[in-house]
Length: 241
Ligand SMILES: Nc1ncnc2c1ncn2[C@@H]1O[C@H](COP(=O)(O)OP(=O)(O)OP(=O)(O)O)[C@@H](O)[C@H]1O
Ligand SMILES: O=c1ccn([C@@H]2O[C@H](COP(=O)(O)O)[C@@H](O)[C@H]2O)c(=O)[nH]1
Image (cartoon, rainbow, N blue to C red; front, side, top):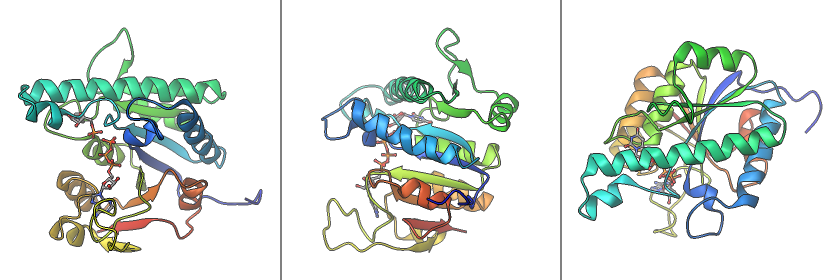
């Protein structure tokens, strides 16, 4: 990257898949993987971009799985949200170890552990150049961290929601299940919802569509992809209103 590289965005909301933190492990957080992701995140902050992150919890717990195993669904969802708090703490710790200031803000109050989400405070941190990690999703059961990403993205006035995942964009079908699936370079929210494409939940798509907040789906496994998206280069799939 040349020293004069200019970011295409000033403030973004990055949704990091919990599952992507597992690396090649069966569950949990793989140290090498999280450190590599943090290097990519820091490279973006060095471009002067204000960065907020929503982290998923699928590497630890998914409420829908607990619910289908006979557990009360709302209780299972609260467990899922708590899983995202653990991921957020691990991520912020890994960022701070590389000498970049990070703040975790939780949608569920657990004041001894993390500070609560307060919008003006989050905006202040972003303006100060701190990385803000939003934990506990929306704070409500029956939602997902994708919806939390759309919600927080809209609240902080992000120009783009970046969905960082294990696949390099939105496909005609889940590429892990259908090897003949092909990737879109761009598509509208309406197309994504009508075709039920499964990469993100409909609530997240609908919120972003209504707020005219575009989403870029890209691979966090692919080295340098995050930075290429930020520089406005051709990477992943754009979903727009
Ligand atoms: N049409 C599609 N195009 C691309 N991927 C798809 C599609 N349908 C389903 N998927 C699947 O969606 C997954 C992306 O979801 P991901 O796991 O990143 O989100 P998540 O479930 O919100 O994250 P977390 O792991 O934090 O719970 C991909 O790994 C892919 O297998
Ligand atoms: O707003 C929210 C966000 C998340 N949950 C629960 O947490 C898990 C993990 O989140 P993922 O988006 O799947 O990574 C999710 O399955 C829900 O059980 C929630 O209830 N509300």
